[in-house]
Length: 309
Image (cartoon, rainbow, N blue to C red):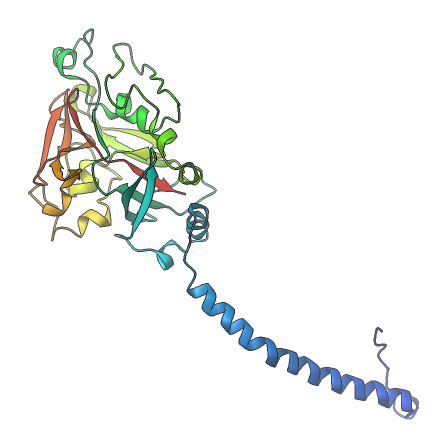
C-alpha cells in the first residue's frame, strides 16, 4: 500500500488513531531499513574482496579490463601469458601497458605483448631484380612499410595472399609465405581482441629519410623501442619498459636479456628499422644482444608483437 502523508496543521488536524498508526509504521520501516543495511553490508564487503581478487581467464576479460582503464591494476610489464599459435602453446610477455595509441579513437588504453622467443625464421623482404637500386636487386628492400613480413604478420588469409606495394616489388618466398597468414594461425579468441595502433619507422636515406607512419595490429619492434638509441628520424618512438629496464641507459651494446632463442639455440631476430645508410640492410638483434643488420632477403628470426585494445 502506498503511504499517504498527513499534512499536520496546528489546532486543525485531529489527533486520531489512524494518524498515530501512520507515525508508528514509519518508525518501524525506518528500523527495517537499518536492519536491511546491516544485513547487506557484509555482502557488499565480500563482493569487494571478490572483485579485488578477480583474475581474468579469457582474452575478452583482459580486453575489458584494459578498456576500463584497469590494465595497470591487474597486470605488470613482464607478466607472461601462454598463447596458442598453430596449435601449440607459446610463451609471451607484456612489454608495455598503455604505451601504444589505438588507431580507433573510441579507445584510449592498450596492452602490448610480444612472443618471448623466436617464433620462426623468415626473409624480411624479397630481392627486386627490376629495382633501379642495384643493392635492392640482389639483397632485398629494407623499407618496412613495403616488406613481405609486415604483410604476413597482419594477414588472416588461409593461404597468404601477397600484394605488391610498389612498382618494383616482388613476392617473398619460403616459410611462412607459402602457408596461412599469422592472424589465421593465432588463437582466434585472442585475434578478436586485438586492435590496430599508430606506429612509425625511420626511412633509409635512399628513400628520402624521415619516417613512415602506419597502423597495424601486429608488427616488429624498432631499434628505438628495444635499444632506446636513435638512428635516422625516430620522432614519437619510445623504448618499451620491458627493454629499457634491462640496461642502466640506452645502449646498442650486448645485453643478455635481449637475446631470444629458436628452440634452444640463440637466434638473430628482425627489427623493423633499417640501417638508414643502406637500402638493403634491416636492423636485427644479434645472438649476443648487440644491434646489427642483415640483408633483407635473408632468413632471420621473427618475434611478433601484438596489442590488445
